[in-house]
Image (cartoon, rainbow, N blue to C red; front, top):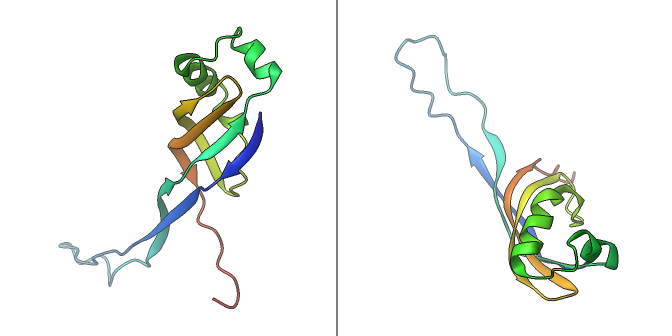
Length: 115
C-alpha cells in the first residue's frame, strides 16, 4: 500500500478535574490533562498488486474492509503518535481506497517551545 493523500487531523481536548471530593482527601483539583478526542479527515491509499493478490483479486468494498481490518496497522498515514486499530472504508476502486479512522489510540503531540 502507498499513501496517496492524507487530510487526517487530531482533535485535542482538555480534561479538567472538578476537584469536588466529598471525603476531603484531595486538597484541590488534579492537574488538567490533554487527550485526543477524535481524528477527522481521510487517507487515500493506492492498493498495490500484492494487496490485491492478498484479497484474492476481489476489490469490492467488503473485501477491502476485511483486508484492512486484518492489516490496519500497515496502512500508511504519516501522523506521528497515531495508532489506528481499525479503518472505515468510505470508497474503493480496483486500485485505491478512501479510509477514515474508526478505532484508534493517539498521543497528544508536544507543543513547540514558541507556542
